[in-house]
Every structure is written in C-alpha cells, then in structure tokens.
Amino acid sequence: MRNHISSFGGDPSRVTLWGESAGAVAVHLLTMSPSRHKLPARSAIVSSGVALAGWALEREPRRRAAALAAALGWHTAPEADVKSCGQDRPESTEDEALLQFLLRQPAHQLVRHMKDVVADDLTGAEHLAWVPCIEPPLLPDHSGEDTRILTADPARLLESGAVAKIPIMMGVDSHEGMVTRNCTGLC
Image (cartoon, rainbow, N blue to C red; front, side):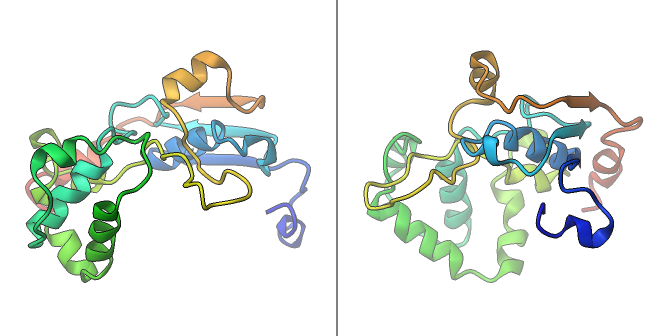
C-alpha cells in the first residue's frame, strides 16, 4: 500500500485503514496481529464492528469444518475426536485430509450446505458461518516470520495492550443489520 498509494494521489505517511461491519472487524484484528508494527497505516476507523462482537470470532473452527464436510459426505473420526481438536495443537493427518476434502468440493456445494452448519440463531445470516478464528502456532517445519493475524482471544490481547499504538475511531451505522433482517427467509 505504501509503495503505490502515491500513484493514486495519496500520502504514504498518512494512510488510514477503514472497515465497516465485517471489514471493521478485520481492521480491528489487524491492529492485534503479531505483525501490527508493520501496519501500513498510522490510524484506523472501525464502523459497526469490532473484534469483540459476538459474531466476529469462531471458537470451534475445526468442528464447523467437520460439520460442513459431513454434510458433503465426508466420513470423519468419531465426534469425540473432532471435539478434541484444540487450537493449541499442530494440525493432524485427519485435519489435513479434511482440508483436502473441502478443497476438492465445488464452491456451489460449499455454499449450498452452509445452512447445515450454522446455529439456529444464524438462520438467514449464513454468511456469518465463516469468520476469523484464533490461528494455531506455526508447525515446527515452518520458518520465518509469524504471519498469523489472530494468535489469542481479542479480549485478552486488548487487556494486555498487545495492540498497535495508533489512533482508532469507532462508531456505528444507523440501521446496522437491516440487510440481514430483511434477508431472513429469502436467502
């Protein structure tokens, strides 16, 4: 961004990241990234979404992925094994097989089966089925910089001060969520 913003009339030393709703959550999470000191921005604006929003963090990503795969015909390990897939352990062979299975599925099938994996409270808001999650530590064979965006619970990161030291403006949009409400039953 800094390398090209001047081509669009911008000042590389005065970049502000901005996001609305899920985009606001993404901007807020970027300020908590281990690489936050490399942010190309001197400030941020988050509108109608923050990393602490109840819908902004998936606490059981492997379970949700396994549920989607099961809806698509995947035969996985017993439910107890899926529950034990903690975020603090390296990926298993089962995880890799699950990932490869999902990668082979046509996009339209993944979208079609999203309703099979969302909680009842998300009916009509299936687009919230896939949100950020706390990323596991890098595997030992990986080297170099930590490229994860989210390494711990956002509340813990905020409490500890592990955030970018930049000005952040937060606000809300009037009638936020109306699209989701009006979409219920139609989508």
